[in-house]
Length: 155
Image (tube, rainbow, N blue to C red; front, side, top):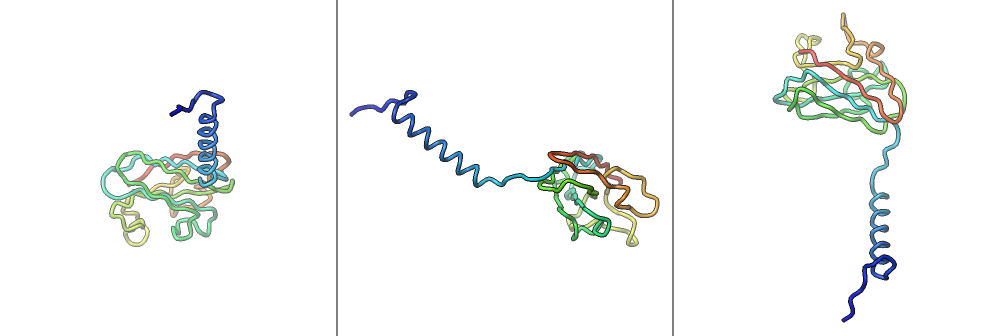
């Protein structure tokens, strides 16, 4: 029985190299292609414990604060005082972000009397809120390839 050489230039070497290249090409073609901009959102001052931190991104004033009309909504366990999420595939442009600590996992920001938050919440740009949160005060410009922002939660 003759042993095949795996030395560079040998037949077994060329076969293995072709096989590996083919596998890499197949894997790359199956992997999702990240197109567009990414936004990294870091949420600080989370009261770590139960529930999740939900982060929603909005592209206009009409949809702002209506989670069902958000461009994307991401959620991460509230297991640390800082939570980070990444939105991928965004078109470059203006966006506003809302984050809240959904302590009871009901997928909504609980409000007292319909307007006072009972769970931790925060907005991009961390604006001071007098009456109600405005899209214009929370707008950040997302550009390719990556933009990042920081939101502080208020309890």
